[in-house]
Image (cartoon, rainbow, N blue to C red; front, side, top):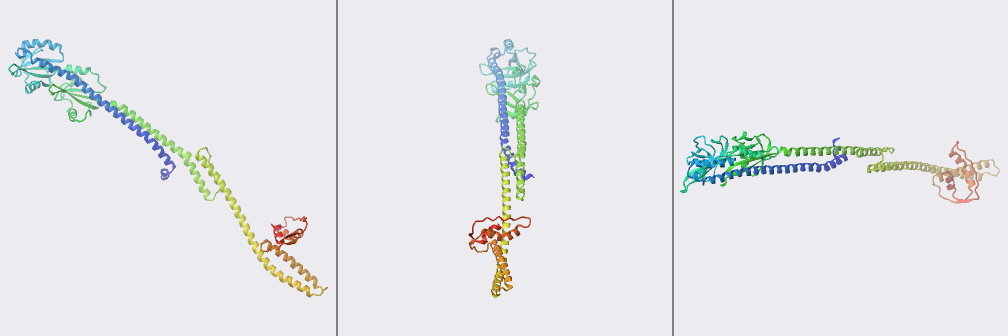
Length: 493
């Protein structure tokens, strides 16, 4: 049952439908894939643009801190280590620049002597990273996230050595960026839905972040994400964020004038919110294509079954019946206007023609059998007539001899004459039999048709039987020249 379904006309039609449906499904899949690729590329561009935007805004703050420290390194009060004059001079500047938590200067050993913000007491900054980096590099020293000892808030410090006229180290100027202000700048940005941004110090500690805000300040930000982004040859990279949501992350650096990394900016754009709707639409489109293909297959199956397969199967069954000798078999299908209908019409006409030919063949065969029977009867009659004719020849010779030997008036003359007449009538009958069997040689001679017909009356009555009456109406003109046997054969036929 399965083999015909796979190899028959129905299977070929279904295969055509499948071949026609495959490009639609492939186009739907490729279209969905291309849409996802374009959206992923767009998300990657958004992630890069977001990271670049945040990095540029924070780069301005770092550059502002570097410019401020360069100016402080030339401030006379700092060169002279005049703490009171220095603090008074910087206090108004701090009010006008809220981006800074504090600014001032420390002795070469780290003891603070100048502070724009009120100093609560002696403070030693020798442990600060920006102080050590300034002494080590002789230029701008970049610090790490700390809590200001003067203001008690989060800060990112920068230091710069102050050199006197003799080239000696007179002091170290410092300026600390306010983490709250950095967070405020980040909060002012309009981020894409579901985006994740973090600004980190060079150790990976969070300075500001969204979402979450200041509650992430001072916390180490997902080292795995930062390390992966640092090592990635191609960015953005798709990674799970802090909330487990897959995002495309990019990394940008904020540097000091000498190229030292001051901050890392990590920005991530969720792929699910972008690709999810496309995936849903693509899945629905693919499902619709598959459903449409399935419906097309079902429709093709039913159409093939009812319009082709069943009709062709009926024609095949009728053909087998005809091959078995049933010439009355017909498809009994309605001859429609389609090609199969034309085939049905032609097939039934062919069967009718074959049935008529078979009938004619049977009739000719019957005629042939009758002719063969008549030929056999003729041959038998001819054989009997020959033998009987030989006997009649002896009888006729004996009758003639007997009549010639008897004297005139002898009573035996009548008997001899009777025998001779009977023998002649028998000879005529023999000629008729020979004519019927077509073994009598033609011998045309003058004869009367009326007399010949009367001579055949007895044989004709015997041939016709008692239930058929025979009436002779003989109006033949004069004698004709013909073979008597052929004339008698024509009367019998």
